[in-house]
Image 1: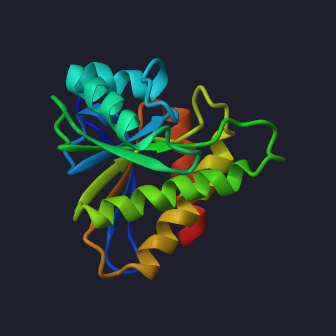
Image 2: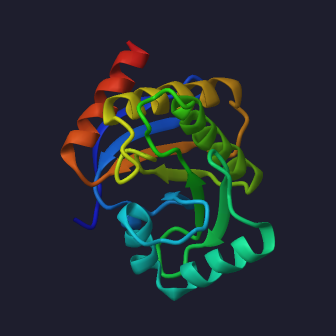
Length: 191
């Protein structure tokens, strides 16, 4: 699947376009994509591996350099590299939590990862960004709750930062069940 398809779209509180899409995050033609990363930026599985494969060796090289310079990224934090061969010129590597049943602050950490990625994108002057469902794959975060936290975080960001550079936010996932969770969460949050 090379081109994503819009499953649901709304206008955010300050005029930003928010889209839930099904397709390949690596093929999104946006200023930045967000990687669901681990703190060492070792892109060995899931979305991270797909991004590293599609973007080529530059992403792994820049990721290693980032960790050497800044140290490991804490849960909820972000690092930044170029996009290599991706259509997106920037990759914001967001470290979400590993799900341990919900009693170890996982929801707050996921929210912090989303907020931090949006803040970094704003700092970089990004106008369009695409996110995967951070932590909901190999990190095991429940997809329905992940989608609800994304809806809360994205809508709150749009409401609070109407003057931010970001004018388009995509939630792009390859699998239909995850897309369905995101569509439902955004419909409920905006109805």
